[in-house]
Length: 414
Ligand code: C5P
Image (cartoon, rainbow, N blue to C red; front, top):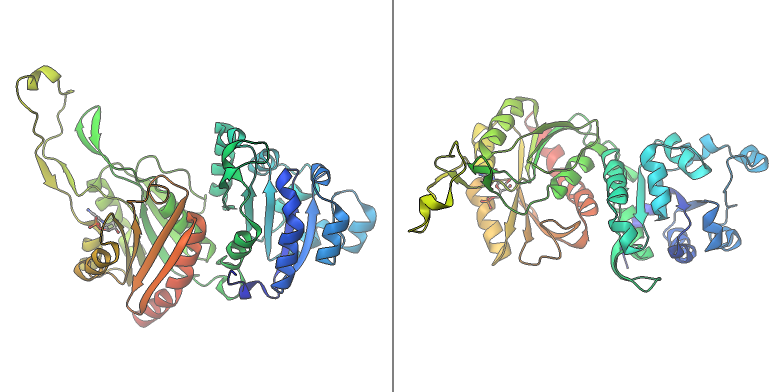
């Protein structure tokens, strides 16, 4: 059973759009109510094809809303009032059409209008055929939603109702419940980082060999982006230093794009005086070519011998942040392939970090280039493992777990 005590007393607005996974929503409502939450359900017109309002009304104990122009429902609780009532909004299942409406900021039905009108955090659980889910338009819309501060939960991968196999299954009700319970803006966490400036580095770096080739790694930057987003939602001012290929961030996040480790080092140190907390998620290249050739290297130059590339060491950015003494808390990441925990413990000590987050990148279904991750956080008071979950949920959990350390250390040294 997930830990759901945070949900007790919360107002959850559940939006249901028209996908087959809607058949699971009465169970979801039931579990939310059992966890002590008050639930109001809003359905789109198409959702009625998959689940009945009567069932949802019975399990939630509240009338179900589906129409912006329902005079009787509006008289009981106007839609703006309903938008303000919610502590959290969850849209599950979120169809491709619902996601597109949210991404364009449409207010064409009650549910999309509520999402625009509510100050509450909105989580979206996509559910659709795997081909649809992987369509660039859907992926583009999901990226826009993330950039607007929506939290995307899932989807899971596996057997689909249509007979296909692949990503697009709605996250199971139990996991949705635990994701909602982990939200940093729920309960006591709201505004827990207000007044703090958090700097996050994320993504890979690229070290040029010549004008067309470079040394880099598989980092997608998604975990760091999610951490920046969680810190922002917890009330922090966030500076994000992003390597190449990192998707767009929320407009309130101050973002600087860099390519090389040297550029990342310079951007970090330029902005460091403004920061209280540094979280180094970037997969910085440890070495760069000693000479980046001005012209593309031609094969015939090396035809009769193996080519050797001379490398020089890049600065260790996080170690230099610790040495500068300019920030009060430094958190590092460690991507390890073997003896994961011991390597990370040693790295935390060697680099003088307050905490380190370690993930085992030998499992290619999580970590690099995946939307899921599984990590262990190691800090001075102990170690906490977070099992395989969306990176957005891991980010929320890390920020929640680190907040007491952040607040203790930032208060101590002010
Ligand atoms: O030693 P390793 O590269 O595994 O350490 C990982 C941690 O150090 C991450 O937090 C990463 O962002 C940071 N790092 C850095 N500069 C480097 C190499 C790693 O800031 N040149």
